[in-house]
Length: 95
Image (cartoon, rainbow, N blue to C red):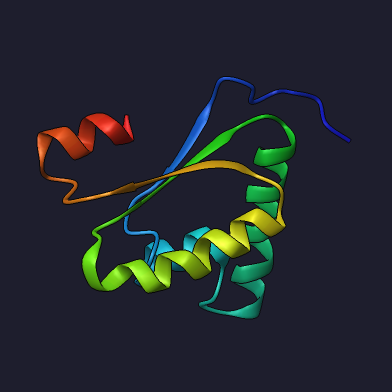
């Protein structure tokens, strides 16, 4: 069931291709953590939130494609932003 409570809201996950960012985007640290994160992101997606998945680019591109596939599975609207988050143009795209 969708209530649209998060329409117009955005969930930003930086470093989404690897490490803690990846675990936040698709789960993975522990089974319990993975289930909780997936449940929260699924609920956010069903309530209209959009995900912004940021990654550095280059060598993380392969990992990011797997993250995208997993995010598609939950039916989330999302965009991917590639680049150094400390760079002004990248941080503007993320926001």
